[in-house]
Image 1 (tube, one colour):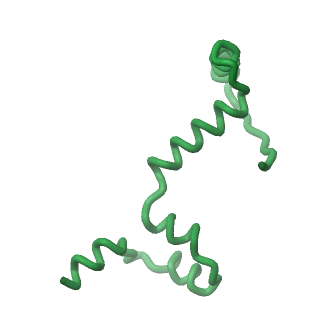
Image 2 (cartoon, rainbow, N blue to C red):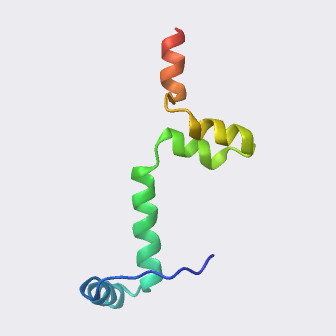
Length: 79
């Protein structure tokens, strides 16, 4: 795990503390769950590729290309 500092509005912090207390969850746990849910619905194919690519040169090429096509779309266009 990594430690991070997060700045929250007072009302958001207060609500999260109450929910955490009632559900017996820490504020860190609530934030981890929320971030995990957000990432699950917001990571696209290009981001997934960047996350798994180990070769820095290939990674820079992927990021530089504006015409990224997801693998499934590329396969369909070849059929």
